[in-house]
Image 1 (cartoon, one colour):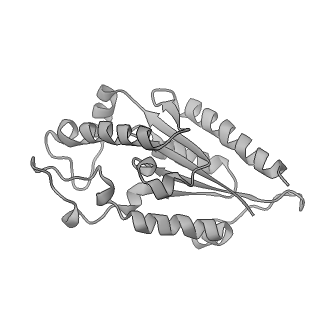
Image 2: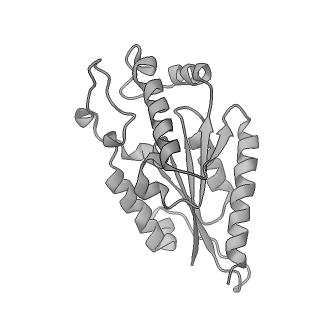
Length: 203
């Protein structure tokens, strides 16, 4: 059984979830594990000296559970798909071995070493500060962002996490989040498809 793990990272409201979902729709035998599904309960997320909840840190996430789910997929991708109500698609040729694709999506996926070591392809979406701030202001979060949260916590933590990521990881393809959804999907889909095809051609 052949597998490909694709990382789709990026800043808040950069379009990573949209890209991951679109990629999943295009690629047979794929599924998504989204980092946002692993946030700890609000009551245990630490608060900084300004009173801001520290959501933009790995400590705010159940990364052990996320890794457990990723490893479950790695052990048996077909079972993992069926468990989530996704039916594996069989190719028409018995000589064409199935390739299973896991799309891992999240804002800190490349900052967690045990996870970023698994990626075959890595993408990170960026958008300018002003666009990011505007998009964030239009989103409804639970709990909602307090006044000043973007400039006081979200953006500074993005810059810190970006520096840490760049010092830790190589081979990430940086994408311009101002491109259309269709353009971003086309870039990534072609790249991942090439990876899949090369894997199929290996003995």
